[in-house]
Length: 359
Image 1: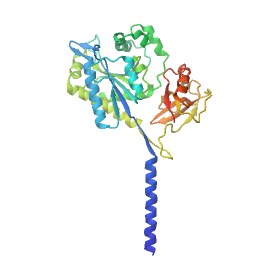
Image 2: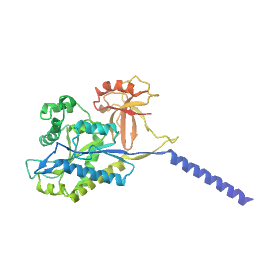
Image 3: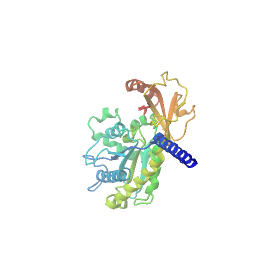
Image 4: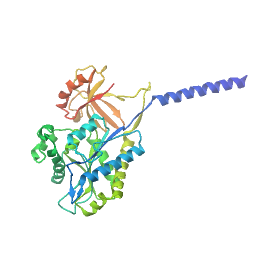
């Protein structure tokens, strides 16, 4: 009899443990990097930087596709989107649109540098930001000048003139809400590229690139090397060199994704739209914060910001933690139309604000 009771007890205990394990598995949700947009610079009637019959557009496309294949092979669940997969011209503003409309988690723009000084060599990675360095400005102006090849570019970019330094004043008014994450990824790219094949590290820099301007996610622009430098050129045009460059960027991507992804536990097993939500700031939005489905994200930070943080500009914000990022948003709207009506007012303080689902 005792043996039967013991067996029944062990069976019940096993059932309880199994149910608990199953419940924990159900309640465990993974917040992860799901979509990456890879942008091969230039294309079509825009060759980019040239050296004889060697065109930047061909180098960037080859490296972009190699990088995409590495991501797909190692992370089959990740959605890899190219702004172009062949030799075609894509307007700068459309490249950011592709990333935004697909709710990308990361934007990688690939380019090749050029300089009048043939000794200039090495790799560098840019993030969107203000920089008064004349050399960086020249690189930025060269890349931005592509817009003059577009039809009606003046209206598409609100009268922006890439050759006029005064036009860049607009960028000083913009806040890059993803600067920290972009800079972290850029630093990883530079670090992973140090092993070669183009080993001269020119660092992480800020510049006002139009292609990064309207991206609503962490975004970087990589200058792989100098097409004007004989040593860099040999690597940039060599298939083995291109593959090694793509592998280095992939290593950085892998490290960035590891830091981005995180497991979150919820009591009912539902996906956490806004885990660890908290209030921050002081300005009253005068909306019902209990029943809305949409909010307006204003910035993201690797560190939790204090309520009086100047970055919040006095707004009554809420935040949720996604991976290692604290994402701050304002408002709680029952429909996207309501959120769209509020968006212009929010953008007066946060020009890069965008609508998110907080349900």
